[in-house]
Image 1 (cartoon, rainbow, N blue to C red):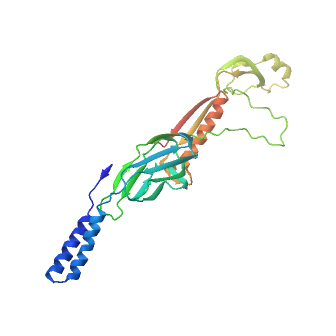
Image 2 (image 1 turned 30 degrees about the vertical axis):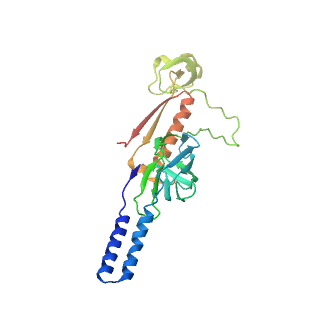
Image 3 (image 1 turned 90 degrees about the vertical axis):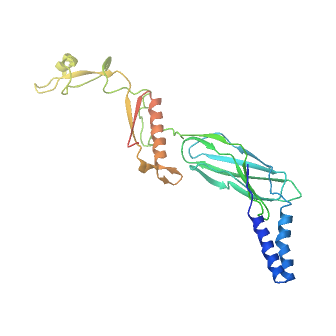
Length: 291
């Protein structure tokens, strides 16, 4: 808490001295009486202090949420003594946007009673990460401005974690399609080493090994000398590998609507990776244009 001495009281004092001396030298009793107004104002004003004992309690609906999720914040205020205006507010991180209510309130503390007030608001986080919600701050002001404001905070800073909102990808099936095979539980690589599991017989293509030629099947199917021989095809070893390329250019960091374009790309890439990992595939990611 910080307290500064105001200059308004000194201005009233100098006003009293100037009017009193002017009335004294001009022998004008009206100016002398008028000079008492700033003096009495300063005297009675300094008898009262602005609120000092301000207690702040803040409650959050949750400590972790996903990108685009809504966080509800409630703040309770209690002022014990003093008189004057009290301003209470929350400084939010840059990526937090207030979608309902207000993150500040202005209340008046009277001399006779204890003040209790509260306010609430809802915020939406636009980026993933770990953030610290700073302590709730308050400022109390003297009713006549004769003393400088008193600053303080509620000592209630909180860490909030924001995670990606992963979407579950599904294969679209048209209602006009019938007897479609269901996707395999595991995708086999097409470029791995051949295994001993037989897959199919196909025509010979350039690059096939001579050892893979099925001479018996070729002899049965061979019609002309120009026909290609048939080869045995075997399942490949290993899992299918999927590469995801993510553009991390700074041009994608500009805000557009509720979320940055880069946040959309990260969410999409994570969802695609999650889908293929569930299919027991090997997933790799390459991030380019970063820096």
